[in-house]
Image (cartoon, rainbow, N blue to C red; front, side, top):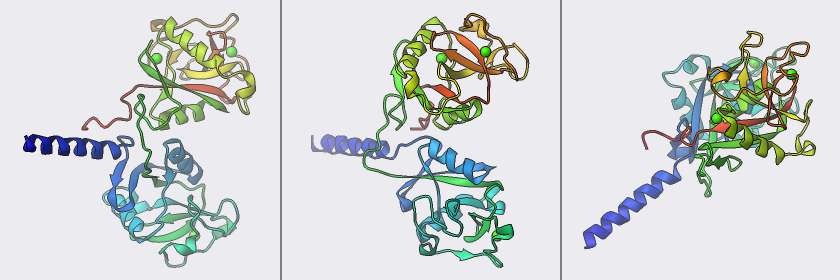
Length: 312
Ligand SMILES: [Ca+2]
Ligand SMILES: [Ca+2]
Ligand SMILES: [Ca+2]
């Protein structure tokens, strides 16, 4: 009796421990820095690195203390980043020479050593800080590209929603079994794609009439006045594209529109100059070929398990 009680007690404890360390499968929990980290191996500019970390629900990581520096150095081991170094979150992009981490820690409070002949602020144009695998740092041009690490600090209220994410703006719709989020801050198609991808989602793919109806209802919850900084207010970006072949419409996952929802608005597609290659969705619930560079609202679709660790 007592044994089974103990067993149950430890089982519950084990499950709650696993749960409390969940964020997303591509981030690893690190006890020493009480948070999750992810090494992005594909080099990016500092601005893109910061944005991608932010969209993933994290921050561009900085070696904010000695422990943190060690963790970052270990993270680089046996990757290409070991040779190139990484962008840190330390930057002076707001005010020249005022180097702070994203979290606001001044550079002078971090236990860091400059590389030989650094900082040199070459061409008076070096406002970002890279860290090399031996822990030394250098100032570089923010438009250079480096790998980087994102960090999310553990907080007490980390809860995965029914959509398998800590992002509460995703809502499950039982009609399709997918989760959806309407982004009312307008972006161009490429940035919209990136935003959905970083959230573990994709620009919505309309598989049937029911899903078109559901997206129409979702769009209606965001009247024109709520879309921020758009070029167009009556169309939102969704997940189809001509992939550089005029008028051959295919979803971003390679399905022909013929297989799913293919109803364009009257007089669309019209391929307005300078050419319209990106998937759009009118408030009416019908499709448009839209200008990729325009900023519009957009809809992300996420499967429930996209961010879950399959091993847990
Ligand atoms: Ca330099
Ligand atoms: Ca879908
Ligand atoms: Ca059009």
